[in-house]
Length: 187
Ligand SMILES: Cc1cn([C@H]2C[C@H](O)[C@@H](COP(=O)(O)OP(=O)(O)O[C@H]3O[C@H](C)C(=O)[C@H](O)[C@H]3O)O2)c(=O)[nH]c1=O
Image (cartoon, rainbow, N blue to C red; front, side, top):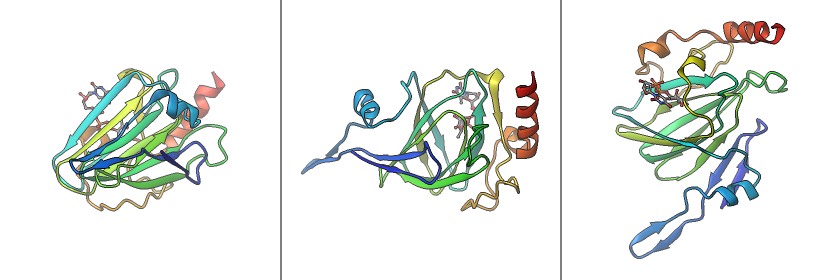
């Protein structure tokens, strides 16, 4: 297994060991103890699977607020995505910074996104399937997000006119998310 840290602390890219033979390959796509030994947090309790018909489909940016914040372990089993994580951890020196990486069925890379990040991706091919593990259950009442093309974030998406859900089209700007977080801290 190879692990690469990214410029934002806590984000890391995992490449599981591949066992190749004349039939193809086998890999352990997740192993709780090995992932923990490698320093990755998160005991995952829910698996998610999304399918996007067309390239240029953008899902996000989403996050669940505490106490339902989720660590995510994201990988692609068909097609490819540009996967983006945005640091929303209140005391982080990289608050509001983002990292993007291509995850694909071909590169078999996985992105570990700790709690406190918003997450989104844009598909780079038709018929893209994304699997991701989370360490907290879906809690719609805590579901929140940031508008994909928020100017303050300035994410360099590879898709200009994406296919979005109506929900994602109406997500708030980062400024509003920051304001809400400040209000929560004062409570
Ligand atoms: C996330 C989730 C959704 N749902 C239901 C709720 C809706 O009826 C339907 C589609 O949900 P949504 O439009 O939020 O799905 P995505 O736009 O793919 O959102 C996800 O994509 C971004 C990239 C993420 O990181 C989040 O995990 C998640 O928000 O699935 C569930 O039943 N359980 C779940 O855990």
